Image 1 (cartoon, rainbow, N blue to C red):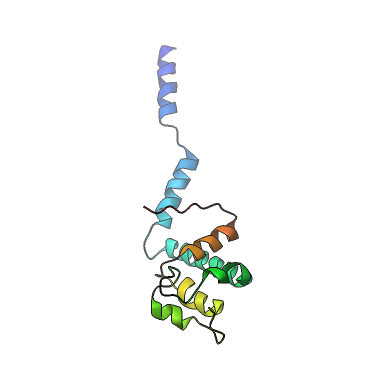
Image 2 (cartoon, rainbow, N blue to C red):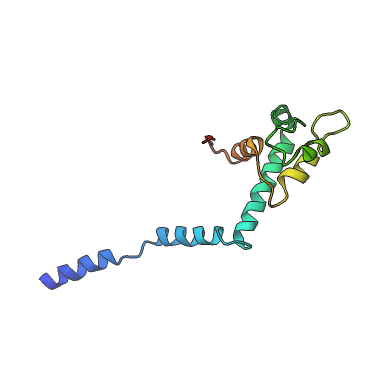
Length: 126
């Protein structure tokens, strides 16, 4: 009888945790370069662009063609995104600064994605 108790304890220690295993596998897949993670990143970029385009009045005040705006990858990119009226054209901005892979994102993009997903985000600078 004492032997059965020891086996029971050993089984508890070796018990598989399906949720932990699944999360571990998901983490691995989402961090593989040139694989699943790229598709997930691209999908999030499309969600962000859709949010920006669907609510231009919400985001345009935070985008300027100023070269110090962190939403643009360069001063030239900021100038390229100007419309005829001198304001940022969101369609051009999204096509050049949001949708392509390998582009950095600024606070406007983070806010748009967070609002799209209904998530709360706190940005801290170190």
